[in-house]
Image 1: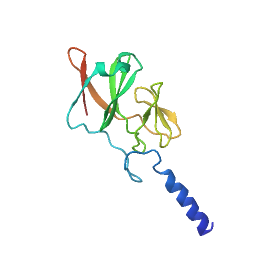
Image 2: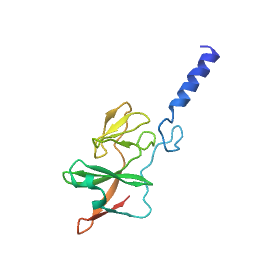
Image 3: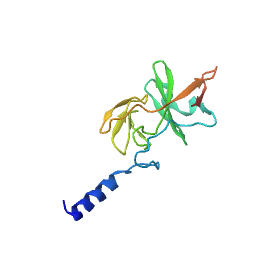
Image 4: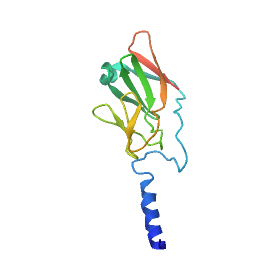
Length: 139
């Protein structure tokens, strides 16, 4: 291959590395589980989607955390893709997709497929209060 061809290929590949990413992970740096330094108190009435099994709501931006209602209760997870750290998108059908490399996740954070093989999203601990009106989210 000519040097011009190699330079063109390198430019294309460099442009593919961070499209859609809103984190600053470099090459070879894997995402880590989220750290919640102060427990988050989430009032469930503020997130109507969580009243129904299969519902998902983003409850925090820093770190990006979502809660999902399953048949057995609430689960929580980081919205940071486990492949390259991009914040995944919550779709209207409550599935999640990484805009960077196309990994797809079920409403409960389980990896289901897509263009990039990775693992399920990092989970966080969700503890309901006695009244069931709020939950505490910790790592």
